[in-house]
Image (cartoon, rainbow, N blue to C red; front, side, top):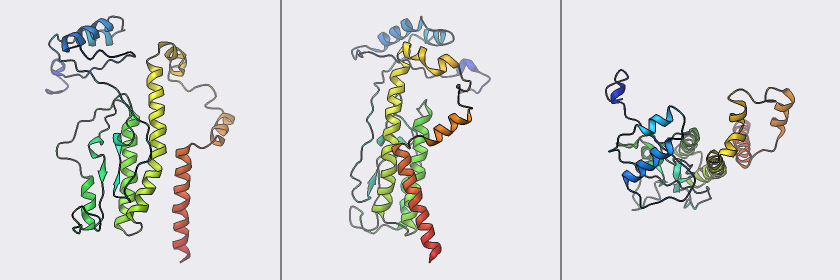
Length: 257
């Protein structure tokens, strides 16, 4: 909104259209715009007008969607780890606001590339916001939420290193052990959801399409809640439980001394 909310004629919008199929990389801006407007004719309002009213001189870029399932990596003894899209790129956007932070290289005072000593208080500077950060591009909640989670856990790991409670290796190993199953699980879920949303028959069968946004049947039932609480813990959940137990043992140890 360059001129504020009272001047909608100056607002700039970002529109995106996606469908399943093999992309034609030979198309130019005009051909892509014509194709989008043709497909928009079958949409309901206001989406139909939003696309068909796009000015004819608009440059329509293509954005191929790609992803990879999070896998364990070599963190070189705790000197390197991953956050954001580098660890778990989630379609459709795979552009978390912290994407420019990854991969994040971390060096201890004994492990700097040139062998120079690095004061411990310079480590947090690696997490400072870049002077020219990328604008938020994700239109989904998962990518941003997991980025925040990544940074929160990574900061805890760095804090344990700075306060001499842990070594680089053990702290970053613990961070990696948590992010790998969490990221992999969410990427697979995101991919599955993306395919379903591009299949009209599956959309027709979806709970949101059948029931709207009201609570699903059985979710307010005490027995249903009990079954949910008793269901098997996911791989990510098991890692979390293990981590919490280890932290609790450490606290009990300190209290005993």
